[in-house]
Image 1 (spheres, rainbow, N blue to C red):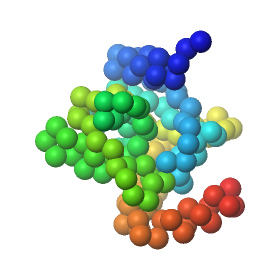
Image 2: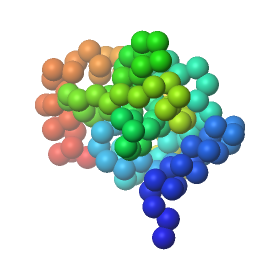
Image 3: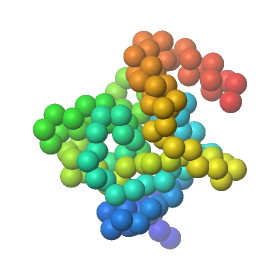
Image 4: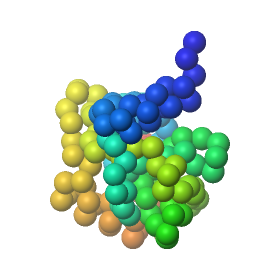
Length: 143
């Protein structure tokens, strides 16, 4: 039986070699932009990561996450899931394994993670952190 970490290590190796990898996403930490258990992300080589990018990263030396970069200072990177109210993860630039380029919906359609609408919506979502808890509660009940 192959473990999740072994699968993620292979996905990381392939992405760094320039191969696009489609990876299903678990959990609710990227709601509402990526729905865990229903959607996947397409991962690409991690060239020039920047604030706002959704990445697969090895965080705090113990686990992989697919979260958004919220800050880069030198080599230090701070990540946070869009569905998180508080709490961040930390890694270095070299721990960024891949950059997500698209979301693949359950029906197989690809959606660009960085189109104008999604970029604006994610920036707005970041600025309304104090009320995200309530919006997510309603969202989870409806979806």
